[in-house]
Length: 120
Image 1: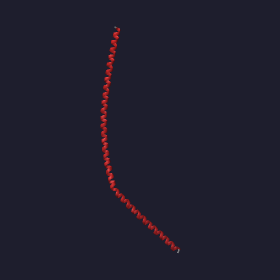
Image 2 (image 1 turned 30 degrees about the vertical axis):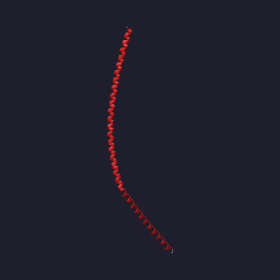
Image 3 (image 1 turned 90 degrees about the horizontal axis):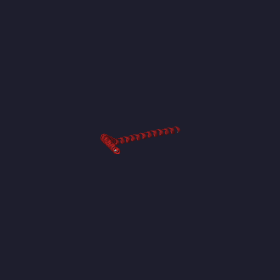
Image 4 (image 1 turned 180 degrees about the horizontal axis):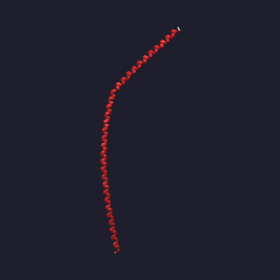
């Protein structure tokens, strides 16, 4: 009887292994189906995301070009203002020099006149 019990035990083990393998294969197939359904569900989202990313890139490029143009305009305006400031500053310095020379000449003339009065 012992041989028969061993055979039955081994038969049960083999049947259990086959059933376990079958169940595992069925579960895996079901998981693959779930994964495929998820991938199928995500395809439209992927297309939409791709379209949104493309549009965002276009908007960013346009904004970058506009910012570059605005920057060039700003630099040009800054150069014009700086040129005007330099010109105004040089005019002020030139006029101040003229006024100081005139004041110095007048002071010298007044000093000479005072010196002449002293000597008379």
